[in-house]
Length: 118
Image (tube, helix red, strand yellow):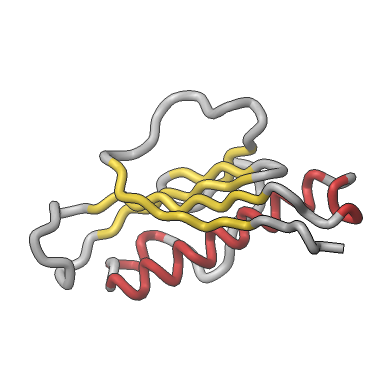
């Protein structure tokens, strides 16, 4: 039942660690510099220090975004399932990117996502 599903993963370089209060729809998780998840999106920011990246500042701050506009009906009733799914995808992409860039300590990301609220 996913013929019209739209799922997007993006990344961007951001300046510094995120601060301030997140939108109330988000749950904050203890991953990277900051991780936020909701029924329709998740964002995970991590810091990357890597000698393999030429002409970069000493630390890059990278944010991975996961957005979903149409999820299978059977999951829509339980927001926790959707929050965990989006957070897991954001973590997987973040960890893969940290490894590919050669970030020290994998950008501070654990091998598995932390889905408990921070």
